[in-house]
Image (cartoon, rainbow, N blue to C red):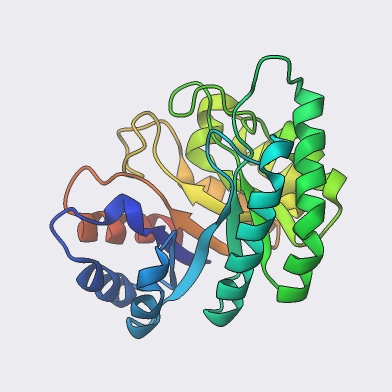
Length: 252
């Protein structure tokens, strides 16, 4: 199972980014998620790939707002070119918050319309646009893409193998639970995974409620070939936390 980590979650905690990435490489990590463009070359210099970068769309104002579509399409098209240059397989996109008068179906329809505009460009680039599932209970109040069924409806409506879901285990434990059954049922629509302990979005240890090893095994059994990326806030020293998380997945 290829492993990655989200740079923002481990950066700035007493270890500079270059040292952090070199140590991650030595642990066995393959890639880094959510790297700012100014660090793209540094990631490659450290012997790592970039597993996920920003595509477009704001957390609060995104694809479910048709007034934003022109700007979002332009941003995605520019970031697809960067993804090709730096061999980035996935770009994350966001749907935005619920708004008064916006039904769940209307929000999904707007996202489908926006994503259809860039699906062919993603296919031509060989890059997958992944729509992240976020919890609206704790971290992102009002976010519309907060249940797997809703996200699957959007993905099916777009109808492209290059538009999928970013399934965040932490976020979906909060919103739905029943993680393994959901992953198995929707594996063909999932293009990327994030980990994190709940509550607190911290380490994958025995002080939180998610049992990650059987979830990892279930993901592997679906035939998934992408990355599992750790996106949690370490309670202690970041390199030690990266090593512990790596071992959880590697030994699953």
